[in-house]
Length: 214
Ligand code: ADP
Ligand code: ADP
Ligand code: ADP
Image 1 (cartoon, rainbow, N blue to C red):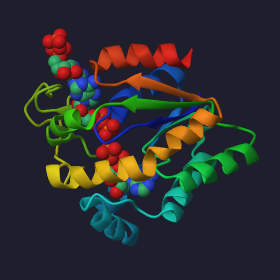
Image 2: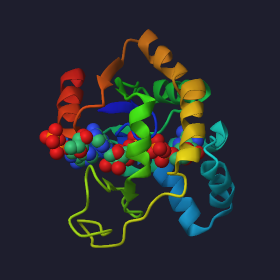
Image 3: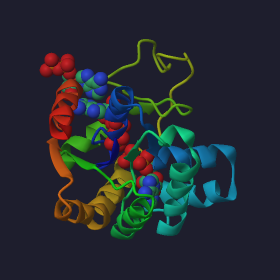
Image 4: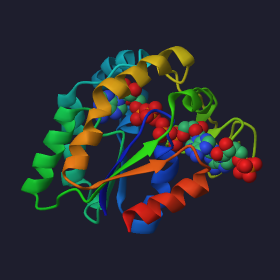
């Protein structure tokens, strides 16, 4: 499968992506996870990106497009297909992705939008816990780990993202509505868009994604 997952922060992209990977055997490219790994490694790119991310802004299109291109062309796990999570986030990113995929004769097949009203996202984001190395996410109330603050799979500590606070979320939602939502119209035009009510329970959202992909 070759698809993009679109949705505001907290919509459930990272929660649903592993289901897609299990079902279709594609690679999962989450640009936020990729940036956080640059931050953890202390690279120059990571240092630059952290300032922007903590303020709820967007990292430059050029950096993000190069990051995704590099993975899609060189990561063998992506040869079977890919699930993009958090990319594209702007019209220029969507256009550059399209041009590259058409050049490779592997056009995008699906753009799935996870729709959740802003007022539900505050609780999701402020309660989110993540396992840094894998990107696995939990929720303090909605999906607690089996052992307090520990990843179910590795037992390693869970952390709260530094941008998962109410103030940064407000800016991220602003960026989403202004810069990312226009790509929904872009994908509707090429007839590969499906919209899902992602305010439901995770299992119900997953069922609806499968129906939409059929
Ligand atoms: P995204 O990757 O779109 O930012 P996540 O998948 O990380 O979103 O989900 C954000 C938070 O909300 C996480 O803590 C996650 O456990 C929780 N969550 C995900 N899907 C749902 C859902 N359908 N209902 C309630 N909480 C959810
Ligand atoms: P969320 O799970 O809340 O949707 P992500 O983990 O996808 O957030 O992204 C975290 C931050 O990383 C974003 O707020 C933004 O600063 C940066 N980022 C991630 N992907 C992109 C992208 N495609 N373009 C620009 N900035 C990005
Ligand atoms: P109900 O009591 O209606 O059967 P649940 O107990 O399954 O619902 O879930 C309660 C809340 O937790 C709901 O908002 C649901 O979306 C959320 N939730 C359940 N499982 C998960 C999960 N794996 N990840 C994130 N949120 C979840």
